[in-house]
Image (cartoon, rainbow, N blue to C red):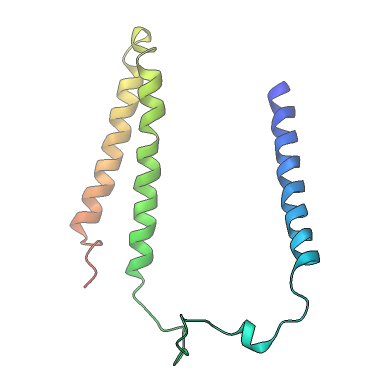
Length: 120
């Protein structure tokens, strides 16, 4: 129960901090926006054309796949830290990681087989 109270206090402090930052920016922010200041600035070059040109959605897919495998790889460090202490308990933790690695490998082979990472 004490952990939940600490978590609730942390969540409340985070919400208060976010609210305070938003309030301070509203109070201290610029009050008279000028059209020139609201315009796009491209290193001194005037922008031409529509800035919302379409581009391939495969860039989004590659970014999502990178995040997915990056987050999955981040689970290996806690596993490695706990594994040494849990060897005496049996091979369950090792089998869990091997299943996890197997699922990651299946996902990677699927991505490679479908040639999702090719941009052209």
